[in-house]
Amino acid sequence: MLLSLVLLAGLLVGPASATAAETLLSQGKPSTASSTEEASLGPAAAFDGDLSATRWASAEGHDPEWIQVDLGTVTPISRVKLTWEAAYARAYQIQTSPDGVTWTTVHTTTSGDGGTDDLTVTGEGRFVRMYGTARGTSYGYSLHEMQVYGGGTPGGPDYQAENATLSQAGVAANHAGYTGTGFVDYVNTVGGYVEWTVQAATAGPATLTFRYANGTTAARPLAIAVNGATVDRDFPGTGAWATWSDVTLTATLKAGANIVRATATGATGGPNLDKLTVGASSGGETFVVAAAGDIAEQCTASSSSCVHPKTANVVRSMNPEFVITMGDNQYDDARLQDFTAYYDKSWGAFKNKTRPSAGNHESYDPAGFEAGYKSYFGPIAFPNGKSYYSYDRGNWHFVALDSNLFDQSAQINWLKADLAATDKRCVAAYWHHPLFSSGEHGNDPVSRPVWQILYDRRADLVLNGHDHHYERFGPQNPNAQADPNGIVEVLGGMGGASPYNIENVQPNSQKRLSGTFGVVKLTMGDSTFSWQLIGVDGQVKDTSPTYTCH
Image (cartoon, rainbow, N blue to C red; front, side, top):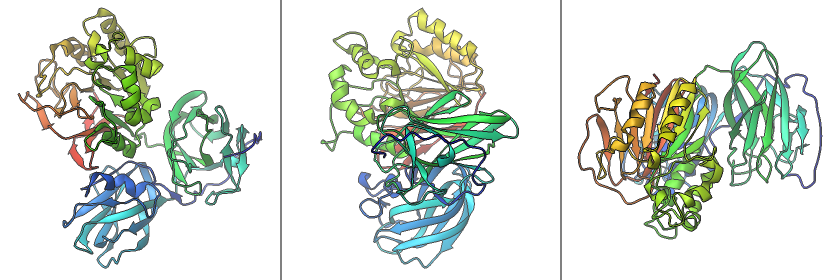
């Protein structure tokens, strides 16, 4: 980063180029695998930028096996580079998919010999995987790194960062891999920005792809403002300052000139920015949300039996847009000193993008009702001075509720008004106590009035915790009757607390797992949603159907 303050100003008069250079797309992106030999060899290690010290390894002695990466949006793919450990694939395919279900093979070999395979391919997809069909050794499959490269957003003009208006940032050229005459290096302070004037022929949605490098291990967040409307985005570490990656979002542009500003919100400034690419949006943008409840017991990663640091690693591998918690964030009494000593050491890494809710254990604090929870999360959990709140992302309206207070009319009246005011097509709500559960706590009628309100407003998804197991239900009404216009419930109470048994299977329960720790990975589209349960070993434990919003 810059050692001294450089204030430069440049006026952008048009895009520098309409041709995007090859970009590393996969580093730090969410990843999954068919199996993992052990927790320390999970799939995220194959996308962390380290070519020798870390690796993914599948279970030994089994074919086929696969590892895949989620690029976040359908993208042209030009090259895939595989850096094998000793356990390589003799026969494998490189495949792409728009949805993680339907796959197209873009490369096939039956004569792999390990080492490094640098493959030129032609195709496009949101998901890219290596599908191994024959091992080259008696072990499994093991990759130090899988790197997916592509040409950026097809047809979209590039706006070089060095030609933009800059504040508390300057143009540099001391790291390789940039595409224009240089890149922008933020000063290490809050408030520096890069501002482009983007031209649009017609009004409508567009994709904004920021090519960046971040040679640190910590994300460098930016507030992205489009004509004054701001969203926050993390720019994760890319492994080295000469390793470039992309962050893409969808925004609505007006016809003519649009102001796009990327402002550093952290004390270390922003990432290095190479360019902004503007492309047409298909209206199908998706984003990933991590969700779990019942998280931090009083232990740390120094104990091999401590689970919440392991589920935090699952969240880290997802690189979600934000994190939802469904209560009982900290055991046993949710005191501030316990939040600081335990939760903060694991899930605290995502605190700034966590949207929490309270559980019954948050109410046990000897210092007062939810005192430690409020002190730890502050305005994140109490944005309007209340422990319930709502927010929007894309075509989704999210509602965080406090089921400790479901017997109080203030929250109920607020919920009715909040739902009446939203114009979003898709609605998700989350809190701690589930109306429906096959676990030890069972169904909790305290949630029935809230369910009825959500059902009447045609809400789509409810997430809960409290029972320490995983369960998903088909669409149903508040009376437990299957209903295609009903709400889908996900119970995700396996964030780290000791598991509970399945005791009384409820109607419409479609999947139940006890003793499986993990995190729910939600994929939210403009009008659809689905999820997977990702275990602490990096494996997919369950995959939901894809639902369409009401």
